[in-house]
Image (cartoon, rainbow, N blue to C red; front, top):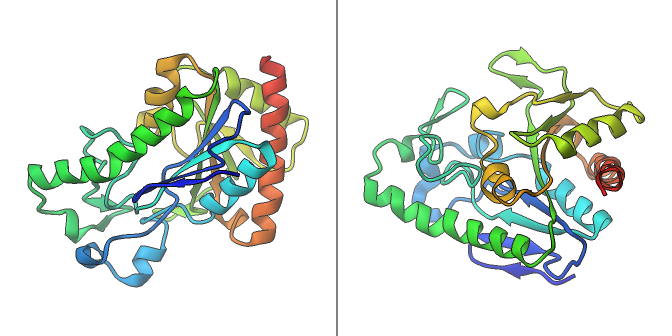
Length: 246
């Protein structure tokens, strides 16, 4: 397995020849020390507002099971959300789950552009390069979400999200229906109207590639054992769904 690490983006299994690219935009809660935690507490920076707990570990196992490349951001989404385009008001969020982000409150246009250049563009370039070296790869983004959001309990356990192209999502849902181990729903707990499909649109839809976004409830991937089980389950469904689309 050949891995490439730039300062703020990491590509694992970069030499994989199988046409599958996994993406983990919210893999890390890291913030450079000079940002003083953006004015947040250590506990807040360990919570879901700063990253997707369990997503990277699960994605790594999936990459191994599928012999797929994996592109992962190395910084917190609070500094720059790599699943948002630079013009989005949530690319550098002022709030997250109603929590104010003090360190983002008074950024100048120049400071915002510096973050785009430093954190988003290297990620975008690494993912573009990874996709371009393969022939018509499947693009799968891996995320996690909280069991309770703004006081509301979420029953969905795995969300299968898509934008204008639902070919792979349809196949995935059919295969999941034959293995009903989890509560799996379409475009839940988020949908394209929430602005969460940037990576799919920018890197897959623009090229006509099969794609899907998988959201996993984070209480289901909080331990290594759970992550291994989930990775095996999802990798198997991806294999079956790809076979259906070939």
